[in-house]
Image (cartoon, helix red, strand yellow):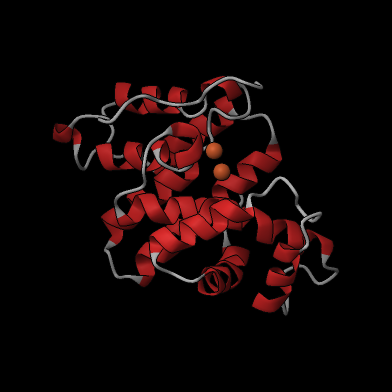
Length: 203
Ligand SMILES: [Fe+2]
Ligand SMILES: [Fe+2]
């Protein structure tokens, strides 16, 4: 895995004529069940999917759009478990072969601009990037708290962000960068995660 460039060197994702083509929730979950062995990674994707859907709903973007946001979250790391050196090229190829809506594919392709070389442009792109690291970070914090998410506060999460030894693999730089790009403060993003993540359906 080390030293393998994940740069996609791709700027077009999917085809415009496939706009509106989506996977049903059950079919998307089938991909997770077939591709992902690591249960923790599945939990991560379901949590990000939930946050994406909840955010689209909070902006009144409508059910079809919220479903697209949900799918981008649910599938963004689908290939990470078994094909880390093809992340996220493999899931992009799969969705392109299934003629899925290009906006979903593009959001997945831009969820790590430093790694994939694709800049988040749309609001969906930017929010997937923003929720990705923060979701896992807040979840890690919930696991070390005896009360889990109950009574969790933004300032507690911020304190952990300053402690570089806590969840050290989570890039603080990326969290700030994603917040800047989304135009939403890190505090507001954390609050959104705290308020919504506990309700994620992890089945
Ligand atoms: Fe990823
Ligand atoms: Fe992720």
